Length: 299
Ligand SMILES: NC(=O)c1ccc[n+]([C@@H]2O[C@H](COP(=O)([O-])OP(=O)(O)OC[C@H]3O[C@@H](n4cnc5c(N)ncnc54)[C@H](OP(=O)(O)O)[C@@H]3O)[C@@H](O)[C@H]2O)c1
Image (cartoon, rainbow, N blue to C red; front, side):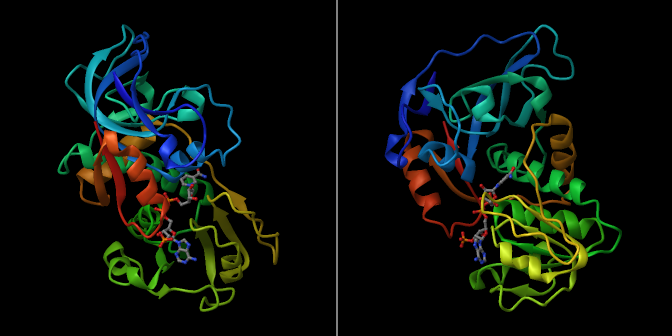
C-alpha cells in the first residue's frame, strides 16, 4: 500500500511516498481504508528528531485517522466491515502510523465516526480531542471554575475551551490578535494576546497548550496549572504545583468526543487538505505556524 514515510529524521523533505506491506489483521485488530489522516505537532517533532524516540526505518508517520473498516479480526465485536470510524494510534509505540492508504490497529483504539460532518474532517478530532478530555479529567475542576486557556485557538486549545464551556466553567483565552473573531464563537469570554496583559493570580486553573510557562502568574494561590507542550515547566509557586498531561490511546473516550460532535456540542476545525503525496509540503506549511484548523492528508 501507498504511505508517507521517513528513512531518517530531518526537515520536511525526508518525507517520501513509498509502498509498504499491509500488516496482518490480528484477532483484536481492525483494518481501515483511510479517508484522511491529520497532521499533528508530534508528527513534525518525530520527523525532525526533536523527540528522543527510537524509530525503526522506514517509519510511516501519523497518529490521527478516519476511515471505513475493510476487515475485522476474529475476536472483534462491536465493529463490522463498512463502519465509519476514527482513531488515534500512538505511532512511535505502534510502529507504522496513519499517513497511509490503510491502517491496521486494535479495535479498542477506534470509535464510530461522528455524524453530521464529512468523514475526512473527523480525522481532525482524535489526538487533539483526547488530549483536551484527558487533561480536563486530570484537572478535576470544581463546578463553575474560572479558567484561562493559552493557545485557545489552536487544535487542543479550542477543544479545551469548548469542553470547559459545556461543563459550565468560565473561560478566558490567550491567543493571537488575529484570533479575536474565533474565540467568542468557541465560548471564551475575555481574550488576551500577551502574558504581560494577563490578570495576576485570578484563575482557578490555567490550561497551557501554547507552552507559555509564565502564564502561571495568572493562577490564584493554591490553584492548578497544567501544560501539554514540551517546554520546561514553571517552578512550583504560591501553592501551585505545575503538572503535565500526555495523551493516551482510548477508543472509549474518543466515543464520548465523537458523540459530542454528532450532537453539535463540539466543533472541529479543518484548515487545509493535501493529497498524501504532498505530505512534505503539508509539514512545511504547518511547521511555518499560524495555520488554524487541522491539516489533513487525503490518500
Ligand atoms: N502532551 C501531549 O500529550 C500533547 C498532545 C497534543 C499536543 N501537544 C503539544 O501541545 C502543543 C499544542 O498542540 P496543538 O495541536 O494545539 O498545536 P496548535 O494547533 O499549533 O496550537 C497552538 C496554538 O498556540 C498558539 N500560540 C503559540 N504561542 C503563542 C503565544 N505566545 N501567544 C498566543 N498564542 C500562541 C499558536 O498560534 P500560532 O500558530 O500563531 O503560533 C496556536 O494557535 C504542541 O506543542 C503539541 O506538540 C502535546
